[in-house]
Length: 274
Length: 288
Image (cartoon, rainbow over all chains, first blue to last red; front, side, top):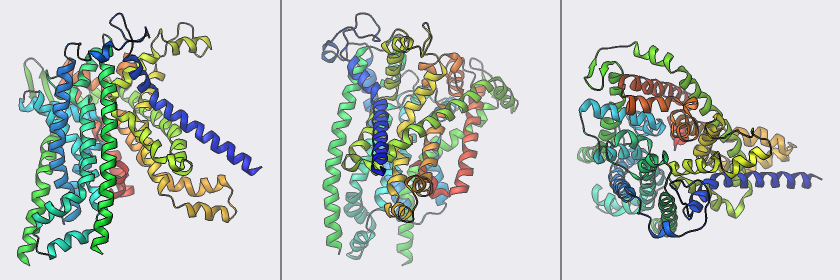
């Protein structure tokens, strides 16, 4: 009798979980599906038949290619800068005694706990006060600002799980701080850095709100969609969104494989340290 | 030995300095500057002058009280819905999913990687007035025959719930996953039935996840304006919509700055109380 109740409960739990996941994926199915929609007019709201023409010419819509190029460039530059700054902060926080640690913690975490509209508004007000022209550079600054905290957190989690002894051994063997950092610490945290970089890139690529405030005349992919949303988003946007998702899935699997290999290397290093 | 100490300190601040300086210049100072901007008077064409006009605060709060209250209401409801949807899912993943655990985790994270704007537009497509979903809802009488789903409170709250759901699932999953199974076994060994064991062991131990999930959903939801704009109508506009239009369209910077400063101050006070209650490490875990 008890078993029956349990089974029913598990079944209900599983069903609920399945439905919740379905809820998360419904829009994604719709996005992918409507990238194949043979829409006749400007709108892409109703299904009018299957076509591959949007996939063959994803950039036939004016401005889409430039917007995507801007997004990718900003994403790449953001990732590079945020990773360099963030790895430094994470290393300093985990490996060294820092005065005013609570303040530093707060400064790193607060941007993550601030609604984007406040971040965007604050930056816009700042650039207006300074008389700083808005464009590519201001978007880049904004993106570095709100991805930095994610990089610090991700790298820090990795650093905290590391065995200090390997670094100490290197120092004992006469390596100085920089050499230890370069030859020992950085290779060991590489998987964490890769994860942080992926995260920073994804967040930058997706950001609309802060970008909307800091963009000026520059158009990124999300800004392009927003502009198009008023007159109906063209199916080519669905093609690009689906393509980007596929790209991320591939990157995710590559990252997973690298992490697994690095995991083995960690295990080997730990063994050797013993 | 002294030299080594000094070298270590130099190294520490060399690593820390650039990142912290960046955040000071482009996060901390802009926030303070926001207060400065809010107290100015003037207009976008002739320029604004600092006038210490404190009355902008009571004025804009009373003028936009509808949107402020609506923000708290929508964000609060969306947070509750996220919790209701996410808890069983996270519980299933942590305790029942077995070897499908990681696959399910990946599925929860994956939607993050499609532009959130495109996903909201997709909801627009799904819920459009002439669409399949609305017609079926009309057929079964869920809504009136000329009823719509778009441009309603329901659509906006559902959109926000959708947008932030993964932020609730992940911390809940982490806290449930961490629970030592032996504690639950011990409870059942001591004659607690399943329900009591859940109520007295699992639920209290999952509370850190509930707290952080709530924070991660409620705070961004409070400032959201995309859902209200794309799925709602001006009757559903939230404070984010006001800040956005005052800054970018009306160009009444002081009002926009004042509202965004009020929003930030409310959140900071909330986080401060939270940090006092839990300590910064927990807060860091809550956000991370």
